[in-house]
Length: 449
Image 1 (cartoon, rainbow, N blue to C red):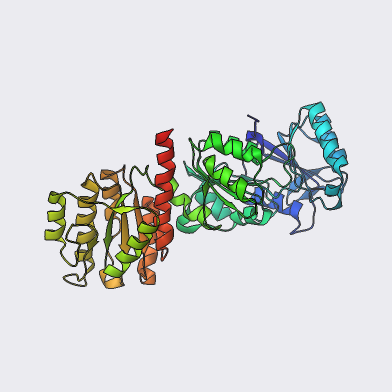
Image 2: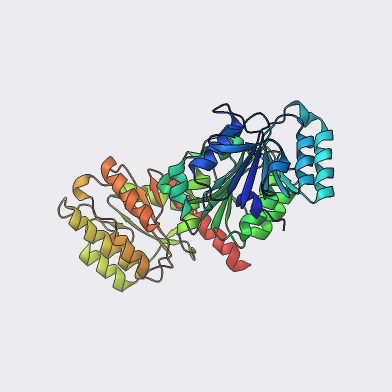
């Protein structure tokens, strides 16, 4: 496996071609590093400037006090010439973030880079890459803004998702956009034209990365290398992908290799929550708790579409639910439909969810639990009751669906659920149920293997 650690977490970095003009790509790389408080040494090379943003600008490589571990080229001209000078100087890792326009049509440049790389033992990423965002280690080479508050939010995570995008814009947006429930993100990369290091190499790196638990990838092209890499990674870490190309045969091969296909771009993050926070799904039989037959029927219909079943609970547990919950609950005890409640009081509803959840999860026939919350403020309850429930039943997935919940109450539930690492889907019944199915399918394949 290629050593990509210096690209994601270098001890020192040199930016070649930093402009003094604000809002340019090269200026933004430096500004990002300073604003997110990168802890390594930062050097910049510009023969026409003495300092930029308070950082000394060196006029030549020979003036540098050390050989930087990583160099980033942002110049648009003489790329191979600059690349060779860096290689001769002793830089072993180079990211080329120069945008190639007419040059990309000329294979001479890439041929030159490959020859220089081989001669001096240099690894390089790019050209035309947007860069890397490493939230976990406080580092970025992104040519567009990365927000400090997001860096601080994700920095302390122990496990999160890492994202590969074959799109500079989608990768760069992760520098300012936060997925729902503050999904913890570890690393993001857009490789541009990956001639030396490609997406498959990055997948291999994420396989070994301890802070990456789930991998999401946006694909325009599916290469043999990507298929082979995912075949190795899938038994170890789930890889979600969304493909926008037309080659259905390759997409099928990627799924056969273990890739988890999602229906749209946002699901790369929304469904990642299930794989990141839920334990292994060991069966297709679910328990449901909901406030109305309508909400429950919405869930049950999608369960039928996904080949999932209602769990048949034991006589003992059925009796507890029917005696203590009542309402319109199914005579079999599952699903639990507590309408009409005795009173529109949050404490009453809280006790219903507490009793029903514990009883269903205790039953051996129940493999996972779906909570439907269709509430207004008067029946809102403290969702933190699920902290203890989750600890008591750590081996069973719990997924929450908010259906027409009053806005302020919904915000509070989402915040509590996020702290407890319980996936929440707002008015997304089909996505939530399908997410459980994908989770079950993924672990079923692992069990079979």
